[in-house]
Amino acid sequence: MNKRDLAKKLSYRFADIEKEDLEYIVDLFFEIIKKELKKGNRVEFRDFGVFTLKKSKGIMFYNPKNKQNYYIKGKYRILFKPGKELKQRLNTPFLASLDLGTQTFRFCIGKVVNGDVNFLMRERENVRLGEGLSREGIISSEAFKRGLECLKMFKEKLSRYEVKNYKAIGTEVFRKARNAEEFIDKVRKETGFEISIISPEEEASLTLKGISFGLEELGININKFVIADVGGGSTEIICVENNKKKWWKSIELGAVVLKELFNLRYPLNSKLMQSLKDYIRKILSSIPVDNSQELVITGGTASLLGALDLKLKDYVPEKLHGHGVTKDRLEKLIKKLANFDLERLRRVKGMEEGREDIALPGLLIYSEIMEHFKKDSLVINEYGILEGTLLSLIEGYNNLPKL
Image (cartoon, rainbow, N blue to C red; front, side, top):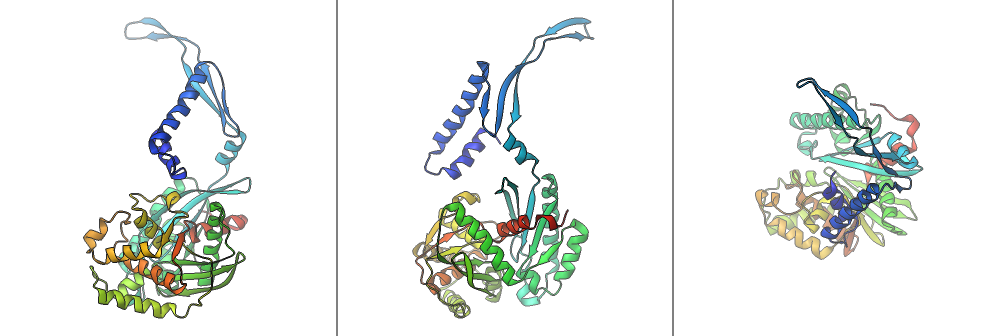
């Protein structure tokens, strides 16, 4: 990471400060350190570490080519001694969680230092393991290969960070595919990963755990709210009251499933759009309508909605976390996307590669969920089942599988 990268990272956390001002602050910060060290002063950041300047001794050097002796004068070099907290952070092992879904495979790594959980890295790949699942009932050979290659890549990255302890979960695609166990066995033999297929109830609990952490980070305290996670193969809806599940539902309605069920080809005409809405409403009709204060959404489709609304060039969780989207803005976005063919959808600002053909079905589901719960807005929470899985792994640290 260079100074410009650091300024960019800071801009995610301090959106009100101009990028040029942040770059100036970073430059000034390092300039002050440099000046103080030149004066012979030590620069200390409590718990982080101490910078000092040390001069090495001069040495005599013999050049065998011309048989001449030379004197090389001592040079100054900067020494850094890490503080107690930084040492603890560096020496604390990484933990990892993997969320293997119908559309996307994701992993995150984190650490626990002094009781505080730090999520340090997240990565995702649009594997689409469940492509064709609704028709064939199995993981196709092409999807099988994509999933396996992705997990091999994940294994390499986790090894790079010396991750030993992890928790990998499989959701809807693993619950439905007849050859799921075959895939799991192959993954075990070729990567060492042990995948646990979780139930819809476990999925809801892990999602709530991650959501609660995310709301706490935002400083939001809501007594009663509804969580919606629109995945590729299913949608989880949870009603939360006083920080506990009041009820939860898992429905077979996902972005990939909807796209394949209707055999969507873009652009979509108004008649097909209405047909999609009618079908979604029919599925949602079994969901209780609860008088909640807020609708909180999480997962890949939620992140995509936020990225499209903000027109983000890159995936920036700091900008998406806590971002609110109104019903009007969502409807305008849906109307816009419906008129584009696939090539044009790929070029939409904020579109994630590999999701262009399932973006609209996912947004339609969220639109109808808003309608169902009579909400004019929703809030995006970048913490969910992936982070909840890591939190649960931390709680059961002594019983973890090892890579």
